[in-house]
Length: 233
Image (cartoon, rainbow, N blue to C red; front, side, top):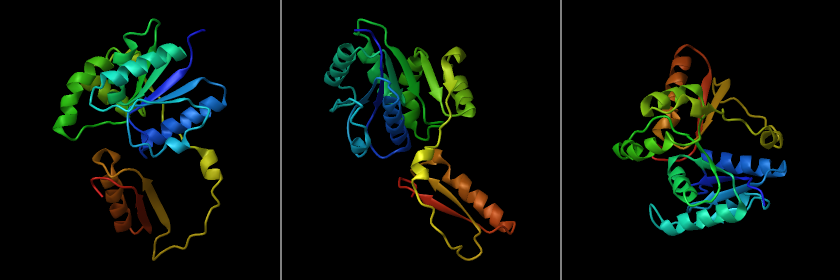
């Protein structure tokens, strides 16, 4: 049996931007005939019902930060399914991917997608002392925009030949199925700018709110609609 197929490895299936995007991409690729697998380190599992039945899903059920039993299960799965590409969603799954791939008797190409630009806690910055050397050895590091890529290349000395930009897309089919509802303008608001994201500093809610204030001060009838949850709610 030849080596092939791709596994997306995520920390959990919580309702988050990275997780929803991963599930959407996995579902679409498997419908196009790709051999796609999904690996999940632990809970929550809110998005599990959204995963296509055609996508084999490995629930690793880790019980500690570095769970050697989960790593062995992942390694056995890679070998048994002959997975040739392992795509980690963010840095933590990358650690599991690196450890699991060490014992695989064939080459497993490794990719990691980074969805964070800046860290706002000392603990997160400290973690990068471990993750940065691993990132420098990954086959390909994927960023969502050029500015994010430039910042990480300079900050963590990533090899420029191993970084790529794949911009986030919009699932047009999802929105085409929604019947546009007629909305009535409230007050002088002629335009609503919406944002759907977790309330965390890196999402930039403050930037949108400051822009709304400036626009309204200039006499423009705009308002903001923010949808989400999180520590800065």
